Length: 225
Image 1 (cartoon, rainbow, N blue to C red):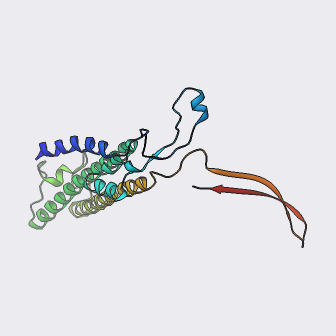
Image 2 (spheres, rainbow, N blue to C red):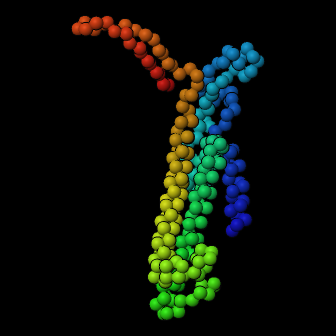
Image 3 (cartoon, rainbow, N blue to C red):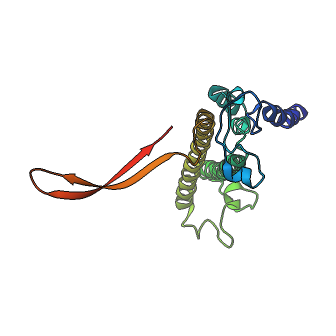
């Protein structure tokens, strides 16, 4: 099973890379371009901004790939620079879940063992006991305020780490959802015009108000394609 998972993680990025949109300049499928006279003068390729609709990523496909394998949507969209962010967030959330869950289980076990030993009158200072192992170095139950106080301390810490673990799980779900949203939006905005030719017109003008007086104004016009 582990070999199969490893093979999938090796093959999936290669397949997604082949299926993802390309930045090459096709001869016949280009639907939009802008000639760059500066680049031509410098002996560089003429086309500065191109769109190939045949290789445009499908938004829902990116979402489904990301749902099956986190980060696959970003690979499909060829947003490789986002992968360290996605996987770093998942690794951080996974570590937080593991760390908080280990402490939650430890305090829960210590609390239950001490509670039942106290009910049976068999509280012990044996280092192998779970509640003794949780004592700070140099402390014993008496220095913790007695058995009743120590029971309450273990119960409170159990609840605290359970809440932290649950919040870590919620954060993991949020990261998962954000990765899907990012894959969808990135695919939808694939053909969004980000060239330098977006229209921005700023010019002063005189506005005449017949009821008052002339005033100066500044007009700002932005045209998005």
